[in-house]
Image (tube, rainbow, N blue to C red; front, side, top):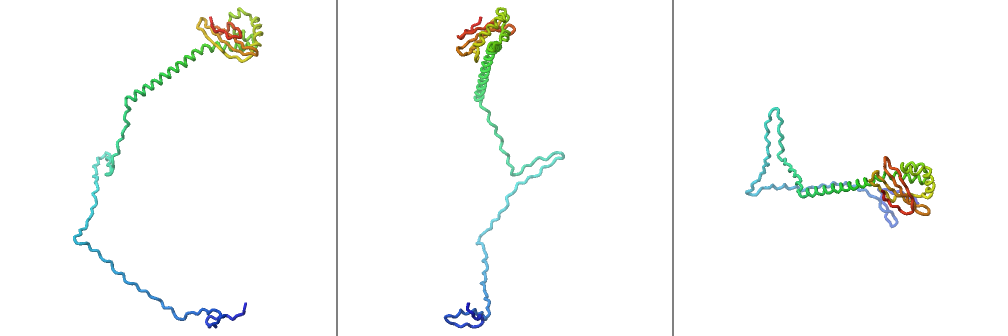
Length: 244
């Protein structure tokens, strides 16, 4: 940078093309404050009513007055409702059902009860019809199971006294040994019947499919004190279930 002498603010600077700008010259004359004057506000004009004007005055509406009721000693004063209290609307009950609709409802209810009784009676009758065949079938089921297991002693113990008089236990064992091998297979009951004779008799027919054919075993039972087997027979054709 060039070495130039410092600029004095109070000294005049030379003017020229290459000279610097004139320095700041402080004002020496004092500043006079300016004063502002405001125009006066004119007064508000007063209102004067027109000739013949009559002012209207409003009076308060009269309020209802509730006079105090005399109080008798020992008696609770009655409740005095407020002047603005309104009685609530009375409850309107549902009109009674017309007699015609009630009669139809009774008829439908009675019809439902009759149908329920008929169904119950039929169901009970079916149970009663099936009940007599359960006891003899339990005995015949055990008898067929003993034959398939080659258990002549168990099967012989289910026979009646008349059958045991006709066939000895030795002979019965020979029969069981012969038929046991041909009765291996699932069993199913094809027919069962109980007669109301004296003593009652029952017939149960079993179907046993084997390797070469289908065997039908007809077991006849009689009810003395208990159900007992009176006879049995095997065939390849469905036997008749007619009892004597």
